[in-house]
Length: 343
Image (tube, one colour):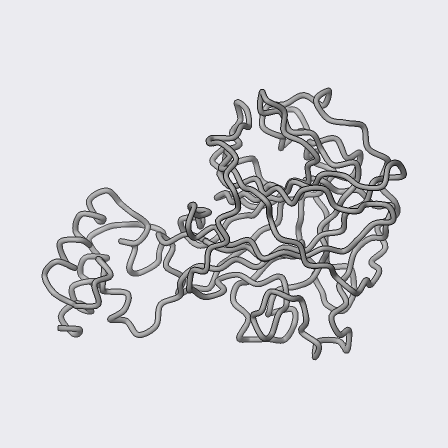
């Protein structure tokens, strides 16, 4: 069996620009992030048979959808999109990374979203933070970040089902490198899928170009900034959890995930374990009657039961009311009990 558990969407290493070898993995702190805004976005998909855009580039829609954080490995107490969390470890707004010489352009980390998340609604906003550098040549480079979600976890075989979006930030200064962050709201364009049971992975690709044939060219050198989920931060109000394992593309950075690139991010830093910085927004249920409102018309009546029944027949994730990963007769009983109470 090949030791390549992951491969970037059926592309060969020849489509990527060469990148320098990564530096030693020693966590370092960095402050003073620069906020950037996307210029354009495009839907994309990665499977075992290839990766490609599934639509044209469109101007960034700059949505303003309302919702809730459902997974937080980012740290932003006032929810304004700027990394802060000043109370944790007395680090202020600083975040961890592995130094300017470390290159890691393809990352997979696990996520478990808030247990009250409306899975079927998906994710409409992603807050991201990364380090962007030129790897020793040039002064600037176009920055494209691919953000995808999938069912399986890091260091497991690819589930071959991940979809997402390419986000083009235009040309960013890259020598010396810079710590960047962005809020990407795609409410008016689409969504990211949430893994069916609320547990799966998010994938980040750091690119400098997408060819007319859809081939993705890795950035010269980039890496995600690192933070931790609420359980590691001692923050019970921060949604979502994350384990210590992350798939990196650093040995060498070639667009593939080899088995030996499964990394343990329990590094003894404050915080611990660390993970690739990302926060995802969706919808979290309030009172039970809000969740029963299947057709979202703010009234509980027979139309909600019919709406639910239609979803139950096709085994939609929304219909899994007892959250055991199955859609069966017990879910109908559970729904009917709540539906009756909400009349």
